Amino acid sequence: MGNKTSLILSRSELYSVVTRKASELGFNVFSRNYRIDACDLAMRACLRPQIRLLDFTEAHVCGVLYRGDNTTTIGLNVKRSAVGRNFDCMHELIHYWYHEGASFYCVADVNNNIEWQANEGAAQFLMPYQNFIPKYCYLHDEFYNRLSPAAAHDALIGNLAKNYMVGERAVQIRIKSLSAEIARYVDGTPIDEIKIVSGRK
Image 1 (cartoon, rainbow, N blue to C red):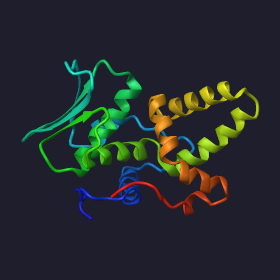
Image 2 (image 1 turned 45 degrees about the horizontal axis):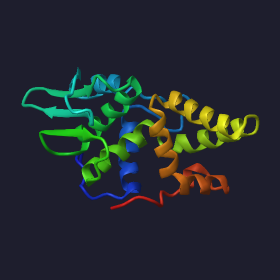
Image 3 (image 1 turned 135 degrees about the horizontal axis):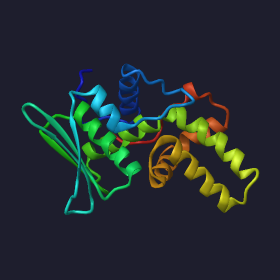
Image 4 (image 1 turned 60 degrees about the vertical axis):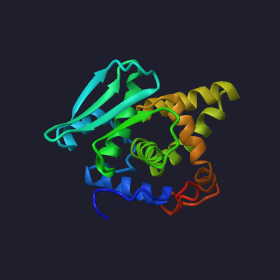
């Protein structure tokens, strides 16, 4: 497969493509200290795209990728938190690496296939399931064994968000989207044998 993906991929296929990209860039998704600064990665690993903080007039616009003839610019919403911008920048990098076209807009709650790929690809790059599931299960047991359910939930989500440099909502979405895979891991399936069963074409 070339650098640009088909617009029709299952979640399993998309995760394979993104995991391969992480490996090509020197990241080991099984590393205990896995943590990605997407803006730093963009400046080091791409064709020197410019990263700009912009004051978008539309609050629901999170980021934009513009590919010109001589330069590439990723614009991020200055009103978003630093961890929100980390996810948004990775979203735009997925567009940059895999989608043809001059520009893309990262807009909240958009369900078209290209935006779904960019969101899922960003989630896999920042929180790879191979790393996220074991860490989630370990921390879940640790916190729920010694804290009240409400305190354990908050500690779990907060710890994972800090670990992966993403927002708490991104962590909650990741847990929900990987629920079937988490269940298989809890039942004893080794992480390198987990099959991604949910998702869409």
